[in-house]
Image (cartoon, rainbow, N blue to C red; front, side, top):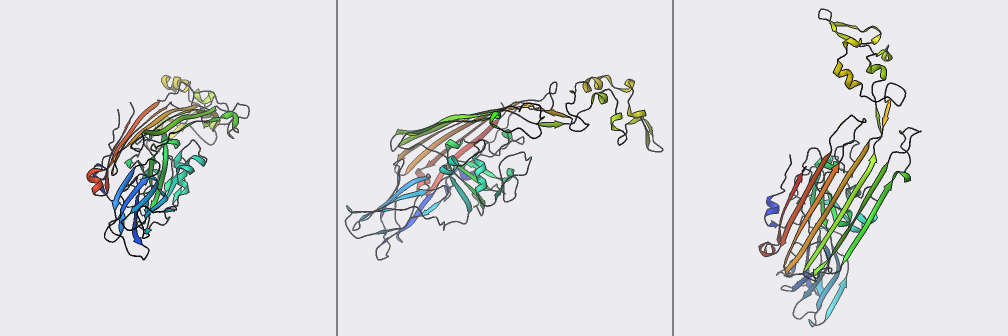
Length: 467
């Protein structure tokens, strides 16, 4: 049995005009020192980490607009006959950001150059979307229990913790359930479509912290291109390779020997086992400088812990049919003595069911209950069942530039979860284990016809399976 979900949508399977789900855009106006616009200026927008460049021309009103750009650090250079070459560095483009970069050109020779270094404006004048960008620095530096990036969504306005005992972990956007949030990975649907919610997570694939470039949480006034969400939109962008080789290797450890004892555990018992190991690596760099780049990561998550469960089970006397411990508050009635005229039944004497009235199969099953290990009739059996999870996940990504105005990338992600049954009673109680394999992929093209329309083509799929 498997569940297969393809995240195909017309906005992803065709050129999406003016959409920038997982990208950004640079716009502005070119003027001279007198304030007059400069039409026909040659503009080069270059990613300073990859060397990939995009070219455009200012319009008759002096304005220019880039096609969708991968997030990162950019330089804008402008040339026009009779003016000095003008260069602006330090433009950091975030996910879904429209950066306004206006430039003023001075009269002079093209061989002369004016350099400007400044960050892109924080003011967004092109859209009303309310949200928060969580960049890689925050993702890496802020403490995360279990290295779950979704916890950082609570930094956004309108986000709050989910109710205790919620099936899906995550956060509540604008008071809605966690299931009402919309998760995107590199612009492709990444929502958990399984009713059982494998891994108790809202996403189909949960990317490693080391693989995320940044993500944006939108909680209000987001445009119709996102759809689906009654809560928030979480838009995640994975890292890409650059002209320099970078990598990480890590291991994070948690152990019960470093923890305090659970308040509800028996005072005389040892601390229940708790071991969590998360380890892995990431690497990215050039295959061909200024042209082709790779990025990949692998993460293993091994959890060996236990739960503290307070059960209420029958006492040894109850297993034998003797319920006198429940007197006088609770009486056990003989169903065979029901009087239809009065609507009453006769209780068993002293609340004891005769052995001859006990079903032999039921009596055998009742005899499988363990002995209580705590006094009283309620919550009289404390058990620490093992609760194990094995998860391994990886991402692979290739970016390639066919030319100044033609960029394409492909990504493939995989996640495997194996969770053994964690039972509230010891054997012979029985429950099933669960294995879930999830694959996600996307292919994006920022060239050809889509480039002419200042748009992009993005195709992707998500395939969760329990096989």
